[in-house]
Image 1 (spheres, rainbow, N blue to C red):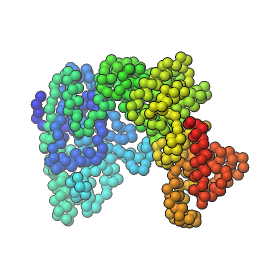
Image 2 (image 1 turned 45 degrees about the vertical axis):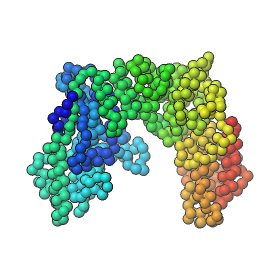
Image 3 (image 1 turned 120 degrees about the vertical axis):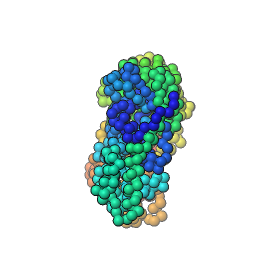
Length: 581
């Protein structure tokens, strides 16, 4: 295997566009950020080497033996992260990329595609938060960033229309359409040049440099592997992908799975399934690692360590055969956990889903488990186990030990109907995986604060009967807007108390779980005023206070905040002891 004659970037982009260049199924997906693409183009403009490439030549008579994917053309963090499957007609030879996919995709997106990433402070999943952007180059000045020289940026159409003495945005992909003599015409006809000679020289040199790099310089240096032995190609692929953006175990395992399943496309099945369960409830962020780990456990393999040896062909065929059963169990488990109020922010361990899914699969995947009244007791028991397991962080180190033990408990249950929480508690009693709470554990719950991932679990123990399918908020009882220096002064709070107020308003004892509409109505009202206005009836007010652990033996005025926290923590602690000990 030796270097072939290098090709130009324009030729490489055309090869991707015409689908002459494809990706083998063993390739990972595109993972580069917009900034990495900008840096790549800056490197090209500065004549920095961008590394060699490794291509795999597949003659037309062998193209149907493998699975291939196209390059991503228009990337979006929202809904275009996966490579489309290539339609191979078997009439043409193809060239696939074993090493260099990230760089080639970056070149294609920069010259012919788009990149959409989420705007800050916008809601995840909102299409308006992911505007399409193209790559632009400022022809009137260098970048101010220390690690780059040329000002490449992904911009929306509106952003690119901004022009002044120091900014003129040129859409980089347009350079593909220009002959060399047309570069000058563009600079003149579009009034890129200014009265400032240095700016004009920079614009002229920059645009000609870009044209030269794309059209003239053969910068794509590549080896061409012609072997048709998949094992050899896979080994080459593993060896050459040890640098750059490293292959994760999951990338490699998914690659192997894709090549070993016989009747399904593993990559598409797993990607589609991950996308589906991540949309449940308020949204999750499960990944392919989680699915593959769950498959090892739910398929009852003896060895469930997350390593390559456990994804050999024999095991992968078992996973393929049980795929519908396994995914149904995971789907139901995620739906259940979503109905318990968890989401991407509050489910602190994805691994906690796996024992629930295993139990459901052994129950033959009951229909409508997360809603049906016949499973009320099971849901209550699973919720109790889940909250305790998350707060005790039993899935931190060596979760395989938990999986094995819980599989053993479930499989040895003679008449499996209810989640065997008592036997789980007994099995792990006295170990680092115990879900029994002592005094210190309960005291530690009060270290959680507003905005922290474990806070929801800690609060949910106090609200076992809340219907989490409805919208609810983690609410400050005394509104957080009150806890500013100016507000404290206006409300007449003694200066000596300011530090305590500022340091404790986010504490667990000032938080409650409240349905969304009441919370919006409560907003920034004084708590005592809101309580009286919302519950003018004495009995209703007492019911609310009891349900939310509001002390009824003290003044609930804002200037009594310190005593309120102390008394409410006492009530909460009493309930924790009743439930957790």
